[in-house]
Structure formats: structure tokens, C-alpha cells
Image 1 (spheres, rainbow, N blue to C red):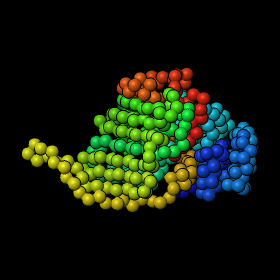
Image 2: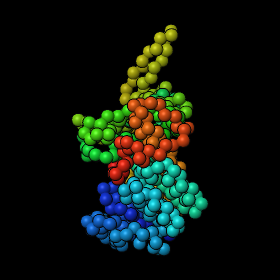
Image 3: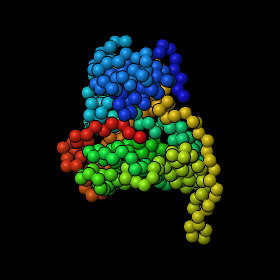
Image 4: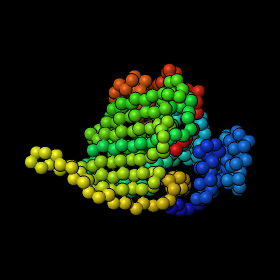
Length: 355
């Protein structure tokens, strides 16, 4: 877990809803919560139970305008992220904002530029980039253990909460996109996405996204909340070895398997799988501690505003591809504002964080 030095920053949390309550509980355990804001009476009461020493407010402006508050963590509905983060940065606060960072990439870019101009920390909540197994997998890739990465597959499936205005791409896939970009170490240059809506019209319950990266690696992301069992699995196929991470079983495996050539013919070399140990600390504990460290020491976080902009651009390209029946979308194109488009996933619906 990150270590911090010097005086202890006072951090407020905006939002005590579905994911905000988890942030409050975790931040209070690893550091402490100075203030909480939420318009809901029930949410404020819960916040008081989770962080008894925190001041509790109805209006987030009361936390943002408090000069004793050094930083805020924003876990409110996605359509409020831009206004709250902008206000906090202008008030001299360091800011953590949950995924998606904003609705439109242009808004995220404005926040990124503002944070740089004001000299403030801006961190986006891409939780799985703090998962110890993902960090261990990144180490294995960077060490050359797997060789050249051929492709990565990520499945995030469940029979879970069925959304009626927010599609599975925007609800689930941001996590997987962020992880693939981090592991592959390159940016995607083309996106193809298809999906199907089987419960509510124009709301995709299932999506399949294909990413072509600048280094030739490909990524495949399958997400669904209309699936008979829960699966959160990541597969990395390299030229030397392969690896898999099962987040449900909490198991990271390294396989000594590859394809060799014998007299011009490809031959599958099948070896045993070996478990790889990784830290058992929860990703949210590590993420909260990482933000506290960045605020205290003025360091750049692992998941910056620029990362948030990048993931939003990829999401918008995937959404555009899906609306065009899987047409390839090149990511060097200017992002398209689809906020009024037919069947857009964020119309009339909050994109609150979900895991």
C-alpha cells in the first residue's frame, strides 16, 4: 500500500450512494473522512454511520467551499462529475472522480487542462488498475516472461442488475478497456463493437468489443448482465507463455504453453499451469491509499485525467461502432458528440460506478 508523509490531508467525499458508500467505508479505514455530502437523507445517515467523525452536508458546495478541506473524492452520478470536479479544482482542491470521468471526452480534457493549470492532482477511478493481480500480471508482461503479447481477452459476465437506460458497454467495459490499455502498453487505433438489446429497446444487454492496438496486439472484451453465471476472467496470450486471471476465484495462473514450428508446421506446446501469488489487499484499499499519497506528496497518480480522456474516447468510438452495426471506427478521428443520438447509453440515466 502507498505510504504518505507530512501532514495528513483532510478529504471529503461527494456522494454516498451505490459506490460512494464503499469509498467512504474504505477511505475512513485507511485514512479518514473529513466531510460527506449527499442530497439524500438516507444516504447522509448511512455516511454518518460509516464515518462517525465526518461532517455531513446536503449540498456538495459546502464541502468544496470549505477551506479546511484539501481534496474531494467524487462518487456522484456521471452527469454531475464535470461541474463538481471543475468547481473543486477552481477552489484549490485535489480531485478524485469515479468512472466515467465525465460524459463527453471534451469535458474530461477541460478538467485535465484545468488541473494542470492549477497545479492540482486529478485522479480517475479506474479501480482494476489497482488490483494486485493486474499489477502482478503487468510485472510478468514487462519482465518478458510471456514474450510478445498476441492478444488479450476479458470477460465480465453475470445475471445481475438489469439497467434500462444504461447499456452494458458503458456499465462494465470501462474497467476492461482501462486494464487492456495498461497491460498492452499501447493505444488502440481501431474499435469494432456489436451488441444486442433483449430486455429494453435500444439498450444493449450484451456487447462484444474488439480493439486493434498500435503495436499489432488485439483485445477482445465480452460483457453482459444477461448471463447464466458470474464470470470475471482475463486471458493474456503471449509468444512464450500464457496467463489467466479469474477474479471470481481470485486465481492468477501462468501457463508454459506456446506454439513452435517443426519443419514448417505449427506445433502446440502444452505445459502445466502454475499459480502465481499476489497481494490480498483489496483494490479499493489500494486505490484510496494511492489518492491520499498523491494528495499528500503532490505526485501524479497512476490513473490520471489524461487516462480518463483516453478511455472515454475509446468508449465513444465503441458506442458509435455498435450504432453502425459493427462498422470499424478509427480512433484518430475527432470524437463524436452522441449525447442526443438514438439509443445513446447515457441519455436520461446516471452512469454511476458499478463493478
